Length: 65
Image (tube, rainbow, N blue to C red; front, side):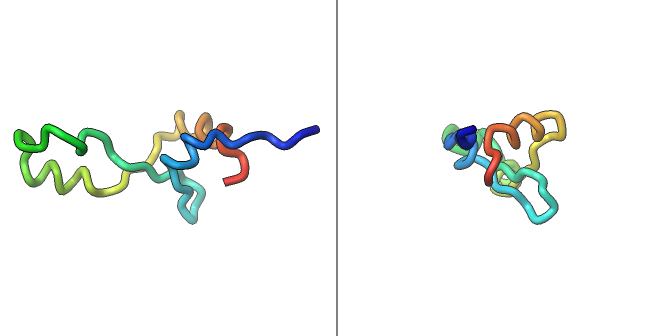
């Protein structure tokens, strides 16, 4: 049976932490930044974690990462 293919778009967007959770970058920080406060923009820099319900789906899409 052939190997499963990794969805490259998913592999580029997520990293796996040491405990096996998925780390992601936050949305809404690419443009229209003038109306956002400095506190909001600073918090958008931090990484977020994928929710448990979505995590199972994402791990199926990247089986070898």
